[in-house]
Length: 111
Image (cartoon, rainbow, N blue to C red; front, top):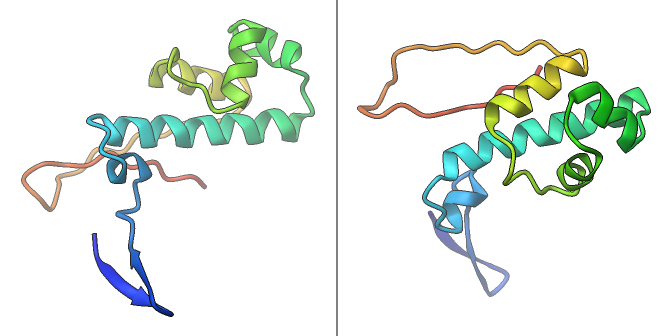
């Protein structure tokens, strides 16, 4: 990360992944999951679903939907989050390509 001084205050630019900046070991995975959760939240709002309706539609319990909409996704896998988006009427496309660096990265692109 790059440090600079703005109006007398030292500012450190983020990497683009807050989880990595905070030192989480599984930062890439958490960034993907949080992006999926954001899209699920948008979908639930766009569709005007209650938590109970969202639970029935996605096949997860209402308490888990409640937690999900509050940003608690620790008990849900990336696969389950993708399944939820599919059940809410969204397509998911996974693209695999050679990496520019020796180790590739996970990226979530939203259209």
